[in-house]
Image 1 (cartoon, rainbow, N blue to C red):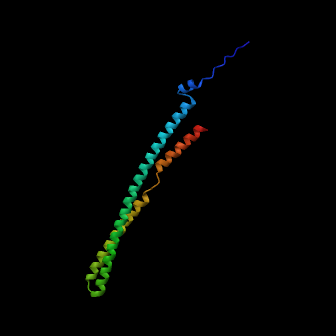
Image 2 (cartoon, rainbow, N blue to C red):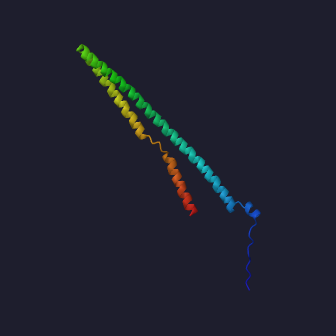
Image 3 (cartoon, one colour):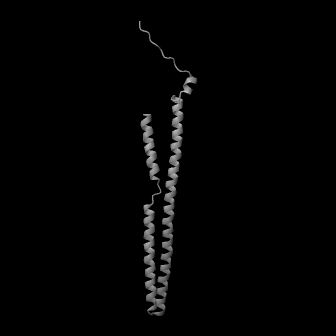
Length: 142
């Protein structure tokens, strides 16, 4: 006759002392998830801050370009007035200056628009990292 030795089930006190119990593992998992979440929030904050800084720089360039374009328009208007009022070559000098100012303004506007286009406000690294974290958690729970 074979005897089977039954292993006693651990008591609740023994289970709480064992660091590898389900409760211990859940605590560890929650601690790790909390740390991961805080790190992801820090990363997203840093990315958004960097993106907003670039956005402000681009907007400042556009504002400067708008001011230069407005000055060019004023000079062109002054040249038109001089040309019509006096009908002398002085208007040609004002026209050349006005065109030069407008060309500079368009160059500044193009640079500002390029900076805005290149700036992504979406925190790409955080999104990638969160997607990877979700995939890892999905794989481990299934």
